[in-house]
Image 1: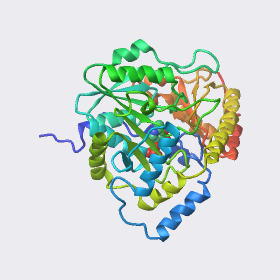
Image 2 (image 1 turned 90 degrees about the vertical axis):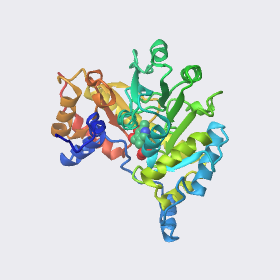
Image 3 (image 1 turned 30 degrees about the vertical axis):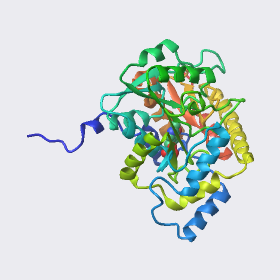
Length: 393
Ligand code: PLP
């Protein structure tokens, strides 16, 4: 009997292209504009809080679903930003990053064969996450802006057509990676109406909620009438506090859903790093100016990188939020995004993410690549210098 030692599930997805690009960047000594992690220091106060927590010997397992201090801080901030009252005792699960929170949420809520709607291009984890949980991903297209500085949009009829009696959930990521789209209130209200009509859960990944430009406003589906008990909000410390390596994130949902998520989380990881959760409580107590500065600094970085990309020959889709620029590479003589990204990392010395990794059908992303601008000024300058070698047709 032939037996393979790896599961059928694993055969259905590839390793992360984003994380692989970071490895290639290191191998070729390239400027890494691929993976979304800052190359500048995290805020002093929260590093100090982490050191103090280790010093005070908060070094054993935290309560499985999260330190009391951190859960209290999350509830307080959601009251402030979303105007929603959350019970930290029954509605919050702290996980190892929002990555685990998303996985735990899908494992806790979906049955084999149930469908999960995902807007594409999408953050690449959502595909494997749905496969691992046994659910079936159904994709709805976000169309690139048709005019300069326009918005990514979706077709209302296509979205409606994706909803069925066996649809379990829809994943909404706003502000969005990779497009930089910030979903508007009318768009979210349409999603809300469909969730109510088809009795569907919304899983909203809001990890870029504070990184907004051009007056864009973040709205969470959980704030909309009718959505309080059918939304799982996923968030975390990685992006807001520039600590992607700490692995602290959370899922917020009504008590019945939360107890299912907590069960899964417990058996996946037992708990997130205890001292870093204490530092998380300190981070979430920083004053409003922290968030204003964060957005202002990212705006400066966006405005630094976009003209560089323009000049190099990319057609840039202007992001309204998050810290990526999705671009069109039609001006370059390459058959697809993978060949272009390979050339860029090996010969020019810059790592980007091939567009196809954000689509179910690689052909849809064959003319796109994504750049991350969560980098120091000198890193962006070093990229600008290297882009001079890149030739258009
Ligand atoms: N969700 C989105 C949309 C992301 O872009 C990322 C990281 O790039 C993550 C989740 C992962 O977040 P975490 O570090 O909290 O696991």
